[in-house]
Length: 389
Ligand code: GDD
Ligand code: MN
Image 1 (cartoon, helix red, strand yellow):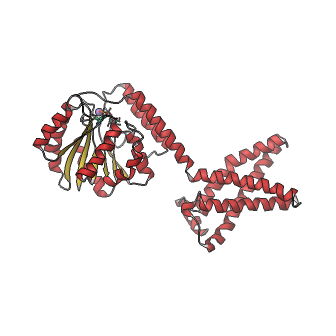
Image 2 (tube, rainbow, N blue to C red):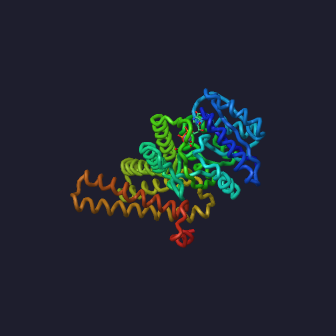
Image 3 (cartoon, protein in one colour):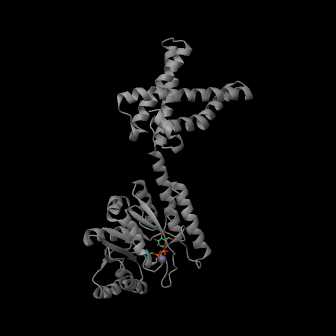
């Protein structure tokens, strides 16, 4: 396959020559399975990095240069990767820094993972023997470690160890799929937002540990405050959007409307149709249960929708049984609450809210996921999951 190593540069005149020599003389000869190419993505660096690259292009024919306006690291990658795919027919792309911070000897390992079937390979400094430079100042160390921790926690994906790193390999399809969504963050946040979308779309991601070397020539282009603000803005908004579209949110909205249906029809049945309270409550609760079943089936659990009529006949009674469980939980909590703190409106309503928030929601949401729609596969309960059909 055609592999293009995409190297963004801004004032890397000294580094780019050293790096390209190492790649061409020491690394590429060892890679037999793939055809190796280099693309330098330069933003018209004032130190004439591109002039240096043009000299190297005379010596080696597998090098290309893409020039453009300076809009940040992410913008350079989007421009460069598009060029590599469209103009160089790349099958595989590598993200690589010009300053020799990334160990070129590790490149074959990244490509092996792609050969194994992974869609993207992430270089990690935080697991399996990877590391950050010992001589980094305490600030940069803390920034990098805390930054990664915050990203992991907010995005709730803990199995990726290095979110911010810039040493990666990926199939061209992965970039083509995400490209249109990668224009919002032009700076270093590109790395986090790209990886986040790749995971969201279910691509197979592997990690390769490496030692990050501090650069010896030139200086880093990161503007820490701008990076932190951008990064936080991305992870927080991404998380909110994700929550908003999550099955849990849809389940909660459905449940809340179900509750309104229950309480409104209770009044209608009692006031307008003069039905006795016991039956009025039973009818209105059942209406709300029917609502919950239908809407959850189409919306929150739409991906696991039950469509077979026989299956519906089997699942609806089970769903009612789960709902009776919720009623039992509420009655018990309200009973205990009023017993301990007195029977008045305040205690009753607070008990109700506590019962729903602390017990009914975790209980019913788990039951739906495990037994009704079977979105969750729990190995210790698999026999019971089979039993309920
Ligand atoms: N074309 C272009 N345009 N290249 C850029 C730009 C830009 O605006 N900004 C940076 N680069 C190039 C640099 O010339 C270098 O080759 C590479 O991108 C990495 O930039 P550095 O300035 O050396 O970044 P760093 O070492 O501080 O950051 C590294 O680690 C970060 C995580 O800690 C990079 O690997 C980042 O991608 C990574 O997020
Ligand atoms: Mn660097």
